[in-house]
Length: 167
Length: 275
Image: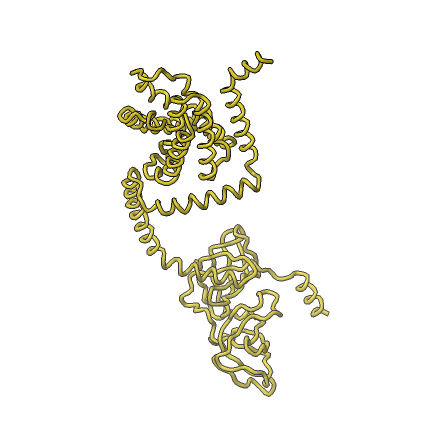
């Protein structure tokens, strides 16, 4: 994998970060403004296709960018996205495996669940909301909403063989 | 050494993960740094500019809910406007009350006149407030227009007040404009007369009469009436007739001021005049 490939991934992540912070509020749901996380889908995809290191490094920097641009808890998204980028590689299967694509949604669901459990668990520290409430109101809703978009992403990925175009 | 190197290479993913976690935690714990605050301020400003542009695009999921909310709010506000219209007259009266409160240093007790006893020159009114409402003898009674009289008797829930048209009531007053002092009494013939006004005193028709600071029973500056007639009583004094500001015929509500005479001063003056 050459430098161009890394730049491509970085550029895609950057575009997704801008979309995430500017347009995604349009499709927010519930009174807690839950939005799908397009950036984490991409991070998970990178981790799944390129391994632990690529996944967690891209997750770290994408999270850091989100932290800076969103003005929220600095370093927290970097932490949770790093973890989200690290996990998918455990489920990687040889290229061309038919079951690979169908399992992608499950991986997105699991990684998002872990990442957002860390994120919101720390984010709401010191508040009166219990972790169960946080989990039901924020973690699980964001995970499901992201998984829906993950499904769309998987369909697109299957159709256009995204891993090849990135590489 | 080579084996250790190979071991580290084997766990490089975990080492990098640990490193990233440590960096993240350092960043998290450095959230109050001025550099971080500056960076964040710049970032928030940047994102805010973009978001304000994008905010013109409505949230497709929320728009119906928002419409519903606005409709409910509209009905709610309509009801509120209706209620406000209903309360308008009451508000006007309360505004007057508030204005009155601002003029007085003492607290007030709102009272209804439950009876008017108009017997010759001993005109009194009975109020529906008494000792249970902290009403005491000698407290002044007023309205938003001016002075009414003074409490002379109290029970648990009622009190009796002398009004200006009572011969027993003498009030130290002064002309607001010229600061000329005098004593206001009811002459028993339908007139409120100010006595002890020197012939040379500057008193004109239309002058406003207020309570004087010499009065121990009434706070200074409470409006009492306007001069309607002034003439010579004798060679030394003037006879000044005033019209009260309070219209007693239509009086239904009054306010009792929680203002009591200074007993020390009263005792001293009484003692002196007894000598």
